[in-house]
Image (cartoon, rainbow, N blue to C red; front, side):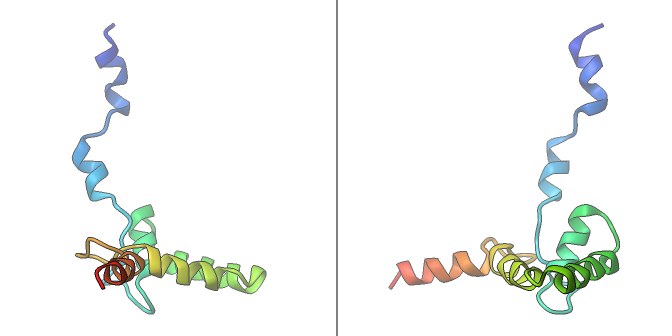
Length: 94
């Protein structure tokens, strides 16, 4: 048995990784599209992600800060840069 045959079930095409990038959703957007983007990335319903975010916020209180950080660091659909990266680039170009 060759290694190519043994590894074939675990090999994934390069396009699959490229299409599965974490982006803020423009379609499933309530606040910043973070929950919609995470749900699309994990291939689960967006309601589950939103309920998890609310539950973790009520239990720990820190999830709201993480949501804001995700909004700043995860690029939106169709954008090359995140909000934070674009802000830093504008500051450098002054």
